Length: 378
Image (tube, rainbow, N blue to C red):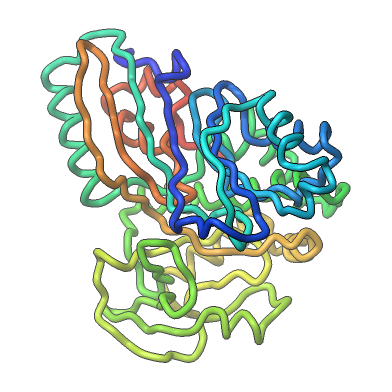
């Protein structure tokens, strides 16, 4: 085993990137904070229990790891602040779990996925000296990741210890048994679609099916709208996703809509996607190679049995996720046996998956020992 991961909190530092500037005024208070060895949900639940707030009163852009030092933001409306006793009371309660770095005001709340990605500073602590051939291979993998990215699979944080969230969700989707409504139940159910996405992305990687006829393409920011297009023979057929969604509310799947324009395919700005199961899922064109993967995913997962009904009940909407993610501003340096990595990833992409892909052929024992694995059913 050449490297150890997260032996100290300082080995894993992540900072959430905000894609806009706070206006300085508005209904919502934003708090930029740093936490250490505590997960985001624990912070939120503590605030709710202590101050009598509802989970929906507090906005976040995403959940951050427990094992490490992480910096992120939350938002809360002035109305909710008044209910819990004002900003001073709120700050006092928040300081029990985190360190407040900055505050500001804005006209809209934070929402899941509405950030500009995350910046990571990671130290892999050397256990053994890396042989020259392994060093060369590592350097090649780093350069390769800049050009072709890595599988955009969901990390182990999504599924809980031993994939417990997926196992519980699978039971519900297969038996049609519904538990109480709530944020945590919904988060658990989302693990079902996430795991089957992982299966899809790794299957396509194994089969070398990187771009297929019928693939739904999105732009680099994973944005939907006019940027959505269907790929065919080197061309992109654009359509209005949101217009399609408006006229097909409640449908199990959505077919690509009326073509609004065509353009040449540019692999540097458009990326193929895979399905994350849920209701109103945009699927690939009928008869296309990519559609075969979509249909197989729904059939093998058992989603067609009662998955759509459960998804509608819990408002679990299907979506397309890029099959590959690309690290930005990637740099590395060595300190003795340690390897220091500095990079940014798009919203929703996992540093643990990037590291697993980077080291899987160089240090497989280290990956297993450090939990740097891509979660799969098989």
